Length: 200
Picture 1 (tube, rainbow, N blue to C red):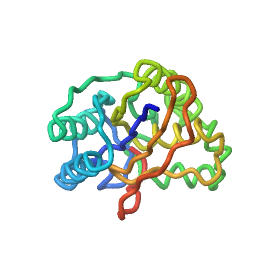
Picture 2: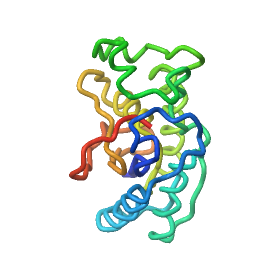
Picture 3: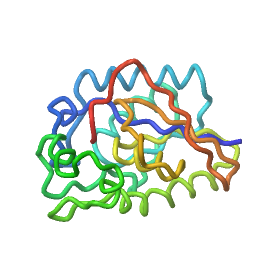
């Protein structure tokens, strides 16, 4: 069996301020870099990955670079793993989306933020083919895949078929997806003790 080790990036400046980011250039905080180093060592203890794949956004790229350097692995970029487009919510508090949807997880799945935002269904349409392609190309290998909170939440729902109860992993939280090159399993949560810092 192969494995996709899905890792959320470390704490970013947006996470620290609990706001949707306004630019892909937002970087990690010092705490986020520490989280990436801890994640690398956790991966090394439990897995034997052959490659690190990352979203091109700076906060994911920085996390992936730290992990790849510690594990002495090659690093590749996957353009479609970028974070959800938040449209007019960019720069706003995380609480704005929750308030707008009155905590309805089903409505949240299909809702698009105004101003060019993406729904979670939109995110699924671009990330599901990436997961399938990575599995097909790495049938017997373990890969680390670094992305974002909304990407990982969407992957969870895509792989389980369950919307209610899906949560965003904490910074550098992990989901492990086993596969045979074709079928991808429901993810296993590998979480640290810290609570989620929200989307992003």
